[in-house]
Length: 85
Image (cartoon, rainbow, N blue to C red):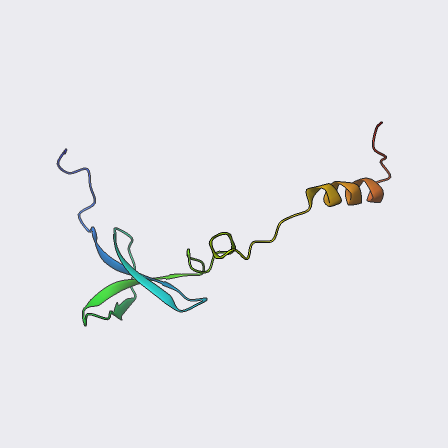
C-alpha cells in the first residue's frame, strides 16, 4: 500500500442511533467532540445518528409502499387530464 494516503486518525468510534438507543463500535475517521464510555470501560468518540440499519424502515420491514398508479390518477383528476386510449 502507498504511504500517506490514509487518514492518520483511523480509530474506534461509537455510533449511537438516538431514535432507538442502539449503539455500535466501529473504526472510523469521523471527527467529533462527544465521547462515551463503552461496555469495555474505555472512552471512545461518539457520533449521534438519527437513523441506522436498526431503525430504517427499509431494513426493519416497516416500509410503506407508495401507490404510484393512484398518485397518477389523482394528478390527472386534479388537473383535468384524462388518460389517452
